[in-house]
Structures are given as C-alpha cells and as structure tokens.
Length: 185
Image (cartoon, rainbow, N blue to C red; front, side):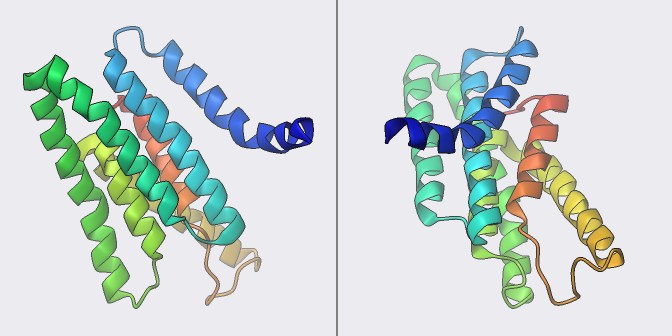
C-alpha cells in the first residue's frame, strides 16, 4: 500500500526537487533564509498548480499552509537579525499587496472571470517573492497564460467561453523570476 502511494506521489515531488536542485546551483551567494523561502514557494506553487489543473481550484488549506510556513520562517528571523527581518517583512507585505490587490480588483470587476484561489495564491506568493518579484511573476504568468489561451483558441482546442487554470502559469512566472533574478525579499 505504501509503495503504491509513493509511486503515485513521485511525479508530484519530482519537479519541485529538480527545480530546487537548479536553484541550489545558483545559490552560492544567496542567504540561507532567502534560499529557504525560495524552496518553500517552489513546493507550494507546484502543489497549487497541480490542484488547479486537476480540480480547477486552489484549496484554502494550501493557502493557509503557505501563510503558516511563511510566518514560521519569519518569526525566528525577527529574533536572529531584527534589522534585516524588518526590511524583509516590509518588502514581503508590499509583495502580498502587489500580488493580491490587482487580482482582487480583476476578480471583482470581471464577475469572477478570475478565480478566488488565484487571487489568494498570488497574494500569499507575494509574501515569498517580495514586491518586485510579485510584479514580475504576475507579468510573466499572465503573458504566458494569454499566449497559451490565444494559441489554444487558434487551434480550436478552446472555445471563447472556456477557461484555463491560471496557477500553473503564475507558478511558471514565479520560477522564471526566481531563476533569473533571485528572490529580492
């Protein structure tokens, strides 16, 4: 029974491990705390993407786990290096607003054309990647989603009223941002 569950979980664990390995190769000068935040967002983003693809939703439990993990990593940092932690905290909170507020406005204006899980996911991801990272991740993710939607429309694989899950594209945007710029938090 355990071996069967492990075989089913392997594809879900494999990609974050590969991405984490790539990040470790680039992390020679990266602070261990920043690397931990990077690894956490890689794992949580992957889980959100898989959930969005399979069930067309991002569970609130996952968002709460993201928030809880962020708090659990920030609290010790506040005690160890208070000045740096306060700077990180401010950038993270700006990332939360930059990631969540634009999507919340689109969610409200478009009459739920954008999912609430996407709004919460990007807000929580903003805590991990900071202000500049949240903006870059949203830009990359929405452009990738738009291009993919356009191609699918042109190939007649998608109708005008059909939707595509956004979390995988936001996750790709986060990965691009992390790999090209690193976390700025």
